[in-house]
Amino acid sequence: MNKERVKRLVRELIIELGEDPTREGLRGTPERIADMYEEIFSGYDTDSELSVQFSEDSDAVVVKDIKFYSMCEHHMLPFFGKVSIAYMPNGRVFGVSKLVRLVEKYAKRLQIQERMTKDIADELYAQGVKGVIVLSDAEHLCMKMRGVRNDATMTSSAFRGVYERKENREDVIAMIRNHKHQL
Image 1 (cartoon, rainbow, N blue to C red):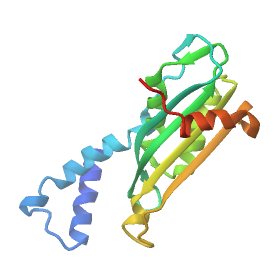
Image 2 (cartoon, rainbow, N blue to C red):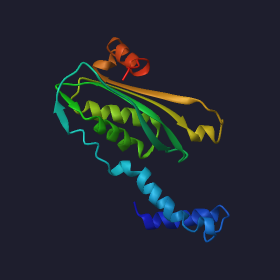
Image 3 (tube, helix red, strand yellow):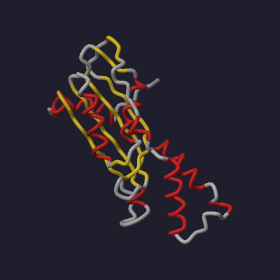
């Protein structure tokens, strides 16, 4: 990303909106937005580090409620929520932080929720696991702030490998959605 160009474009946008970019409250806005964009769109240059694995096996590994923030590619407004990932290892497991990084890699882009969910599942499945389930639940400010102005939330899902068969995924989805462990 060319931060200097982003700053110039934001300054031009402020002018087009009818504001004065030299006004006290707006003087640093182009730089702040350029810094913010560098952070929230860092997914284009992120490595999820899924190649780091540990020898271990399990019937299912579930990581629930990974928080994410993304930007809708249609209106460039935020959508945010939680992603839960389940996978069936094939002799090797991933560190939990790697799955969080995987979510961030795809969330920190101009995005739609359905593609983000699919891309997370595809990349994890490509690592040789037997199956993957990705469920994402999100609120979309493009729907809350404009247009229909509704508080509906959206859920999207992706199933790969052994979890493409409905009978293989029901228990795992129940573990994600309903089962609460006492810690």
